[in-house]
Length: 98
Image (cartoon, rainbow, N blue to C red; front, top):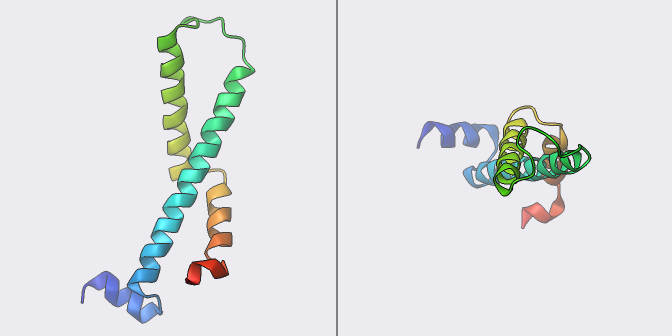
């Protein structure tokens, strides 16, 4: 029996349950990342578009990729708390026991 399985067995958490919790945490962080990305996207729309890069197709792609990378970084770090809130709510859901 490996160390992780042994730890989960002693703590009363089955390896299957631990895997489900890990997947749920990742899914909640992914959701938070998408939420943050759309928040950035909406914020960008409110800013005038005259700048060094202009409104070229390439600059739009660059801005989008930058926003996505920042959103992923924020969500994987401390985040805004949305992923953690979702995780805490969903881990107690009676639908997860099936």
